[in-house]
Length: 210
Image 1 (tube, rainbow, N blue to C red):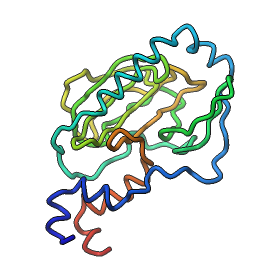
Image 2: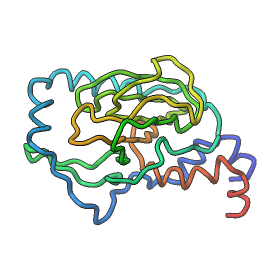
Image 3: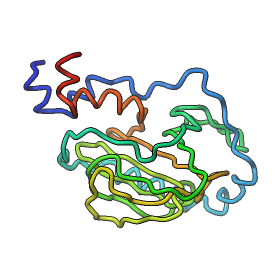
Image 4: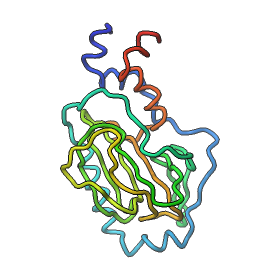
């Protein structure tokens, strides 16, 4: 594939460049959700949880034009307290892999949009709590969960670095933090690996020296 074609179709090229972004994290500690948190959101909200999952799945099928190939920024400059794809166990013994990264937030702190995009969803849900979904185009999305306050609305256009909400502990969580996801074509991928690889597309200098 030639250099010009690489930048003519950046997201498609990116997908070929990092096809293993969703590999599980090795040796990550297993987290067991406390029963008290589980009881707060489980059976009494079972039907609502299913409706919310289906809503997000439908939104993630959106295929809008790519906004641009700008470099992304972190939504919050903080310590990672739970890694992408780390194993989780619920009180009913169901296990799953963490779909994003958790960033520490001991008090309400402003979070920013990682890149330009359109707000597809900004509201409260049972498990994610107050959460925001941003469409960056061509099947690329970012999501921000457990917020204490939402500062944007569905349909808003946002720019990279724009404050979109405040961290919190809403939804199925034990303590305040930001759960941040990057989703590509309906599948969560490693946010930090994405940032590392995307720089070769958003900044041609990296691609030329690779």
